[in-house]
Length: 45
Image (cartoon, rainbow, N blue to C red; front, side, top):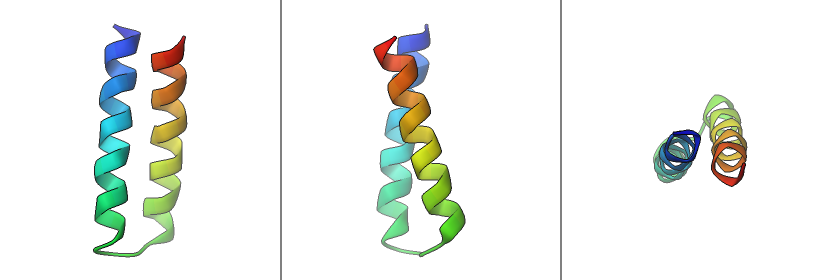
């Protein structure tokens, strides 16, 4: 279950990265970094 949640969070972060090219924002960058780290940790463990 943790792997699936990590996989989902990783792809949400990828989608937000694409969104970043449309609208720039510091909050978006912080959320992307948080989701990538959290998703990777949940997927890898």
